[in-house]
Length: 407
Picture 1 (cartoon, rainbow, N blue to C red):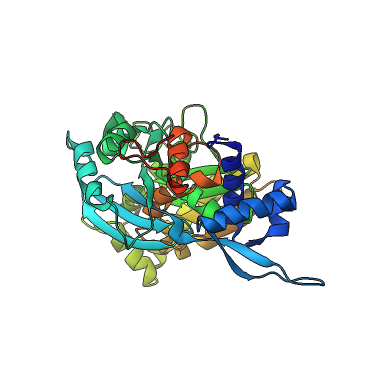
Picture 2: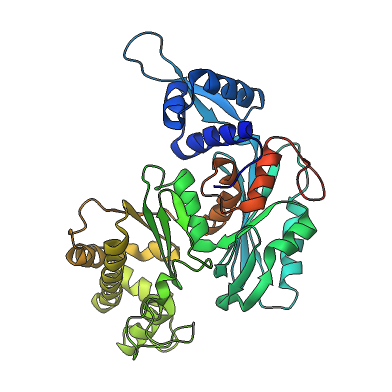
């Protein structure tokens, strides 16, 4: 865990963590869950109420005597900007501390030009100044389709963006004067699921994304597992067949080379389901209209995905699997085959592992990016390092125009 300031700050962060991950909670439950005395909880609550970071939101049921109040986060205590970087566009959102999205916008962006970082900063800068009508800005989260060795440093390797050791975090911090946390986009999405989504009620979770690529994030004991160099979860590059199609990573037969949208287009053309100039949208359109051959292409994809995910579940034994990404728009054509194969390949028949589908729109990736910043006060797993420390200090009202905080 990251050490956020003084011991008192750690206690306050622990309380914020509990409220952020579980929602409104009684003082008694806070004391019990965190191992704090009722007096310590009362003191912390008094301070957080004075700072308007929490509020009394409801009455807790009681088996006798006076019912206690429930304490919840005040979303207006802070907000974050989240940006999803794609090869040809940016999606940016502004999100409150409690997860409520305030605004969202999309803008064209060419990630492959030499001055891409300068252009990224120029897109974000107009939205980072003080605004009396908005909660204080705590920092910027950036989600990228690549490997990030350390989110607080933010150096990125991303094949799809043609970025090699690009110092995204350092550059944006220097231009914007704000804390910046950078992470792989699927890991960012997993952080959002733990804070605000399907991961709130469980400790161990797999977040699987389908779309142009195939991705996975591993959450264990409510923390994202990143591996030794930040590259854990490259599920799309699990080798399936050395003689298989060429993957964008340069190797043959990766799972993504069979199941990504370009791969499904290729399969559909080979089977004569779509014409040589038609794309993935034509395949889905035919499936939606009941075309048997088109539906079979997607069902075969679901079957192969179910087999691969069952292997991951057999190794990791998650409580829940969340399926997300642009591909959930046509999940109806994958689902039956996926679930049947997943259950068949599970050593325990999939017993006890729930599979849930994330409601998706284009801003979801960017909301995950914002969650990288909003997770900092919750001490989620400490991967934000010194940038998380700066976010927490800003939340507690200690600002500096140069680097976000004074001591």
